[in-house]
Length: 397
Image (cartoon, rainbow, N blue to C red; front, side, top):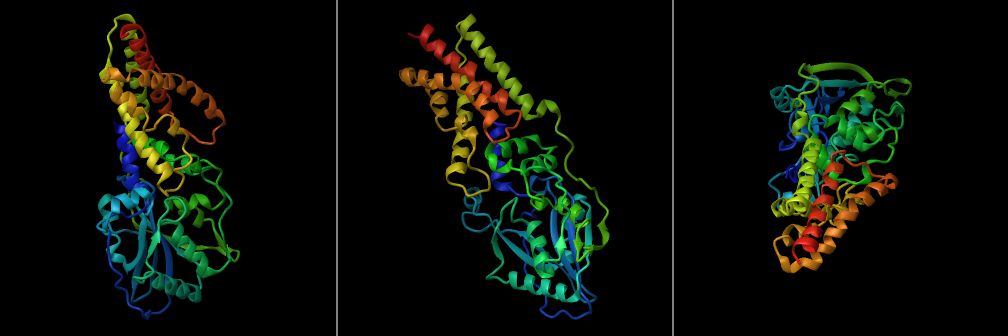
């Protein structure tokens, strides 16, 4: 059940570093005044909720009379059909510019460190950037289609800075993580069920080798790279200031191993082996567990099928776990209670007997990384399916 819940959670919070639920209006004056502008990238350390695990980033522009923040992590939870559209991949986010003092309280409250990197931009570049942001924050322009690895709260500010500065900015070539999935696993390391849900729902599109700038979708990684970036041969970051000295990592403590997906998978496999032993040795047909397993696999399969064929979320297709988690598993889940389904149940059971070892063998050649907990859960299908076959072939004739 927790694996299904993990899948459903990521459909709502499939994001990296957004300030979900934060809504505000653009109330900034058009005039600048107050002398020279200072531009900085603000980075907020990871927080305890799943949508905070990668932190958050925003742009700050200020002078002696004005202190503004430009936030690309705003969405309207009350908009029509929000949950369905979000699950389908229609993740419409907004950019807003507002007073910086209204930006800080949520991060102070959760104890996340907030720092800023003051950029070495000319006044012409700074004014160009502010003009671009003001135009983008207009009601008719402010909505954009959010993508959690390609177009989010970290990649958008960085793109606007490079546009304002021209082609003179270079990031270091160093890749901190080889793939999107590796980077997600690092930031989700204390949340194994959340990462398990991501690994079930998202396919091989997360596993290709990244280009040098693609790992900047996580704000802390962008912060690290900005510190080493150059503009016209000079350092891009003029100075770094700590705005709030909170925790570098305000996430929850690690999940105890006994509560992880791997522990659940091993327990599932042991119970499934016990189910086969019980019917062969004692002729006891544990149909409750057989039904529960395949119903859960079928419901999870419905979610994954929706993601593969109907969602526009990044990397949901192809997903080879659909061979295991698919709606057809509902046949076994419901059919063990209906003896008249004997022929179709035996056929489905043979599929689930042969499928796990074949899928595991083929996985060597499939460009998709599976969560380690998948394997004991997957192989739990074999003894349960064999129990169904044994029941109809040897006991119920």
